[in-house]
Amino acid sequence: MRVVSTYQTVSVLAVDLSRSSLAYGMRKLAEYGLSGVELRQADILELDQLDSRFDLIDSFGVVHHMADPQRGLDVLAGLLDPGGFLFVGLYSVIARRPVTRVRRLIAERDVPPTPAGIRGLRRQIMLGEADSELSILASPASDFWAMSDCRDLMFHVEEHHFTLLQIDQMFAAAGLEFVGLQVPYAPDLVRFREENPDPSALASLSAWHRFEEGHPQVFGGTYQLWARKPA
Image (cartoon, rainbow, N blue to C red):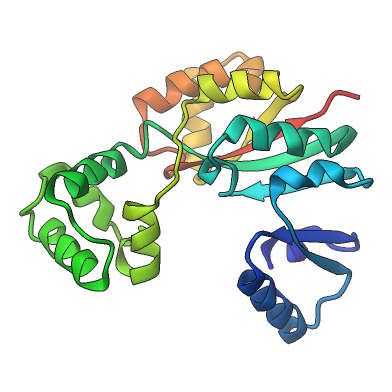
């Protein structure tokens, strides 16, 4: 719904590997009376067989769950028209350090990804019985509180985290140029500009990496990045 409501008066191809997710999408499109959307069941790695090319590809929270994120990014980049844009969401190594810690704890204690196992671990974290540095996972804005979201947060079977320096290299390998990223809270953007007065820093992933090292939660765990395929 986010994509369809954001990019109006356009034709949208929505792709998902899960048929149940596509069925849910169809129901919600009908519920909101939205049209101009084609839904297709497919694997990202097979999309390079499409004849179509796109002005914009929106892929949020998908590439970092692939076995080979670079390969997925390469396929998406190849589907862009020259001058086309890619909006991609990727997990941050720096911001998700507590997630890495809790996964080590899960492995050490052999916590099962069952409702009982998840509730027991959540209780330990809330009471400070697990690791004091994990308390940040129980913030009000976290996926900690819903069973399915918490399973995805702490027990996901395939997940990769990146630094902005690594993403810079990934974009270059895919033939993309970094355009900018979205900062969830405006005061953080003001702070970045104060610390980096050179306007070119806004388009520098190295500058943003240094900023994130000083402000680890600035991106809320997930980078929201824009890249462009050179014309």
